[in-house]
Image (cartoon, rainbow, N blue to C red; front, side):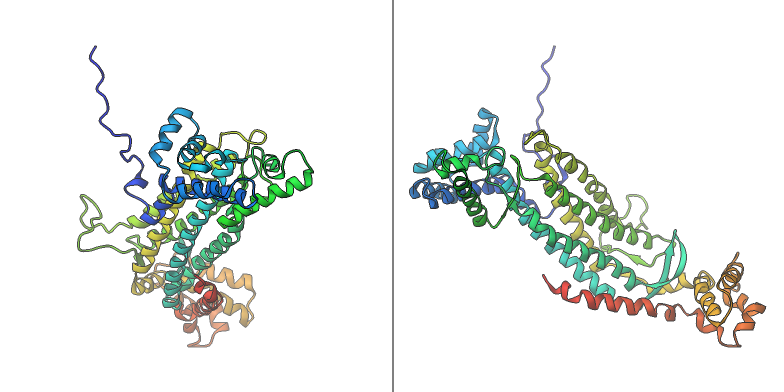
Length: 477
C-alpha cells in the first residue's frame, strides 16, 4: 500500500480569514501571541516588584526578573518548547522566565496560581481592546452626527411593516441610530470598571498562599490577610487594574459575559443600520446607496450593471456571528466548584475574534456613512408615488381638531385611500370631492395639509434637539 502523501501545508499557514481578510493591524496586534506573552510577563514582573517592596524577596531578584522581561529575554519559541514538555502553558512560561531571571529565578511566580497571571493579563488585554473599540465607535458617532445635521430636514417616506407610513426626515432616521450608538458608548464606559480587573489571590481566590508567603507563616490571620491583599493591590495598581473583590481561582466570568453581550448589541445596531442601507438601495427605492468605486469595483461576474451593497451585507453577515458569542460566554460562567477548564479553550479566541470583527464592522460602517450617496429627488418621487396617501394622518388629525370625531375621521380617510392608484387618482383629489371634508374645510385650505416638507418640521426640530443634547458627549473623545 502506497504511503499516504504528507500535507504540504505549513503549521503556520493562515486558515482563519481574520489572518488575511478581516481586521485592521491595530486590532490584530492586541491579540498576537507575542503581545499575549508580553502581558503575561508584565504581570509576573509586577508580582516580583510587589514582593520585593514588601521585603519578601530580595530587591536584586525583582530587578533581575524585570530585566529579563523588559529585555525580551523570554522567547515565544522557548515557551513553546517547554509547553510541549510540560503540557501546561503557564508552567512553561514560569520555567522560561526562570531560565533567564538570574537571581530572581527562585522567586518567579511565588505565591501565584496560573489564573492570577492569565486573568490579570486578560484584564490588560480587555482594557486595550475597549480603548480601541471606543475610538472606532467615536469616529462613527461623529460621521453619523454630521449626516444627521446635513439631512435633518430632508423629507422621505417613513415605513412600517415595509409599507409607506407618514413622512419623516433622513436626518431623524439617522438620529435614532446616533442615539443608540451613544448609549452603547455609555455602556462601554460604565462596563470598563468591571472589565479592567485582575486577581493575585492564589489557587482558589482566598489569598492564603500570599498570606503565608507575605504574612510570615501561620501567624495572626487578619494581619496575614491584610498583607496578602496589600500585595494584590500593589500588583494590580501598578498595572492600572482594579481588584476582583471575590474571585474563585478565576475572575468572575459574568464580567466577560457582559462584554460579550455588549459586543452583540453593538453588532445588532450596526446590522440595523446596514439593513437600512441595503433596503434603501433597493432598485425600486433608490434613496440611499453605499459608496461604489465606479473606476474599478465590480458588482457581479456576469451582470455588469450591478452596484451591490456588499459592504453593508458584510456588516450584516458578521453581526450574525457576533450575536453567537454570548452563548459560550454564558456557559463559561458555570464552573465546577472553584474552577474547571471548560471555559479555557473557547476563551482563547472568543474575545479576540469578537473584538477584531466588531472593530472591522464599525470601521466599515464609518466608511459607508462617510461616503454614501443620498438621493433627495428619489425620496420626493417615492413620497409622491402614494398619491398623497402618506398625508392621510395629517388630514385625519386636522379634521379631528376642527370637530369631527376621531373614529369618524379615521374611517373617512380609510375609505378615501382605498385602492388609491396615484397619478391622476390622488387623495387630495378624492378629499376635495368628499361632502364630509367640504363641511370642515373651506376652499383652498386643504392643500397645505398635503405637504411632506411641512410635516417633517417636527422631525427636523427633534433631530436638532437630539444633536444639541448629544453634542457635548460626542466631543468627548
